Image (cartoon, rainbow, N blue to C red; front, side, top):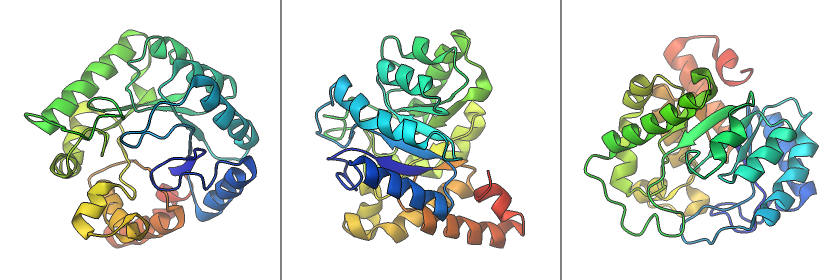
Length: 268
């Protein structure tokens, strides 16, 4: 899953692709690099950033969705606003990626009658304050319990199990230790919930904490995190650096499982 932020203030590439022509050019490059899913986001959720008004988020993302919907790759919208979900579904996006776990009033109603895939993410607190003092008794058990509850809420509303995937929410209300506890337990989350898992760790502070590298030098660490997640069964790896991650996954898979790599990672 390639990240396409059409925002001026995202933590890693804010402002780089906010103009439509640059966003489309970046999407074309990701497609050439072997991306499987393009995840479009119009609101930064890095710690401390205030929310974006609904009209502004729609202004940012809808032209990109309409321009890319015939690009040959599935499109995902990264949003927690039900109104954006509805408009994106009208534009035929393939996936709703909600950092808020479809908890906003009207979110489940907005998506339940569609055919789109739904990604439930765990977040402790809100983006403005989530990294101030994240605290858990048992982070793995608590994240699992939250995801189970949200899966139950969606299924009770009539959403089929096979439409759902889960995201433990690396960096969203977690300390470095919490993030690595979750990464080491990726397989446990997948097995317990019996759902595909999305892992989004690209360039995050958990990478910098281990490598000591600044934001623009975290590629190698991000690739390490991607491989650690994939080795435990993560099916979607959300990244900024598509070409490098595809190469890393293909070489790792070739070494671990023999040929057939491209079927998994390049032609999904």
